[in-house]
Image (cartoon, rainbow, N blue to C red; front, side, top):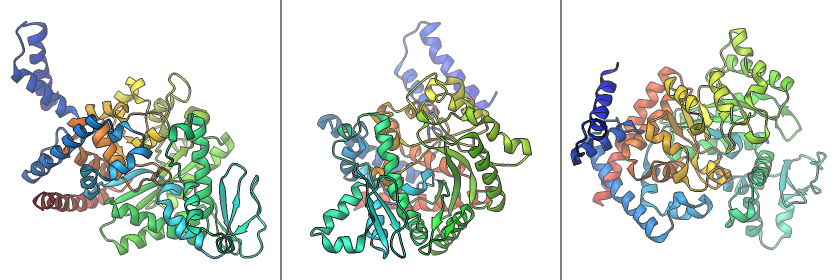
Length: 512
């Protein structure tokens, strides 16, 4: 038995001897030991702290306790509120502003069309020459870039209108641009009225993706968008990202369409250029993803293409996943024959499966967590239903398979209302392998990872979460990334340097 585990178990037994066998009354010292043991088990609880870290932690705890007390008094505690209502309060938070300065390591659960704040798309992409818009009967929008008179038509969409001319004809361009922003995010003042069921919000969610994709799929926007997205994460003190990408066709103004290889090479080129421009950014990788509604034949084609891309672009291709609303898509086991192709061929293709993003229990969809582990997933996306599967949780901990926890996404998409009740509260209390990510920050009106780190620190981790909690989450994101061993070593060194600078900055804030 591991010595540390033996000492821990002995301590627990001795405490409970007082309750169950020895029948003596527990002392304050016994209670203190029990509390310390519980803390030791939690995320970051077994990390040692330097003198400087202890000083920063004291400062952080003071402002955190005050903000929690204020929330209890006013009834407005951001993690207990819908993010659309809480965002403004979060941005005023001292804790949030400290977290923004903190190096967060890696963003490992992100989607290609929802990386960058939609402001950039509206203020830049829609102002490019040859940008046309059409309007759907339900108030949605789609875009396309045409060299000549529009030929392509979308079903249930109006005639194409050249945005340059349209803006010249309307009186209030600012209000029009604001309407475009609203069509690219889910943010609303009354989310409960606007989205009355999970199916309804997923329908709207996918509409926003279609609208954004219609802009981003234009080749000049595609590359600029990704570069600006990297810049936004970099400014949020993120050192590396991995994105789920469907690698759909990207087109030029002359009508030429590019394939998946072109997209991978474009991501690779832009990431390398950004790292040259910003040497303290470590890069980006792509997890090739397909909709879980595809049929078996389409999945077989996708798996074969994923193996080909992974072999050809090992520095950029991280692996494979399926995306889309889990409740209405095929379960993982439906594709078992296709997903076993790489293993049968002796080919390496890492999996990063979305699984357990559901409130339902005991159904085929809910079993995705078990199947993800059976199919040797490297990480589990969301894993929201994990607490209903104690064996799966035990296996994932034993084999060090982390969960990609995305608090704001789970709340906005109506899995949980109050983030203090998120299943990850148990994962954090148990020190389960996990990382924090943002899923689709642009659609939720967020930026980078700071908002989700704040929600995890204040709500999911509760009042006990400390600086070491944040430190462990950041370090875990590097550990569980798809980076090479050497790249992880380099990123750890870079992160530690930035961490030390962060500590100094926070202490200087206190002195100021």
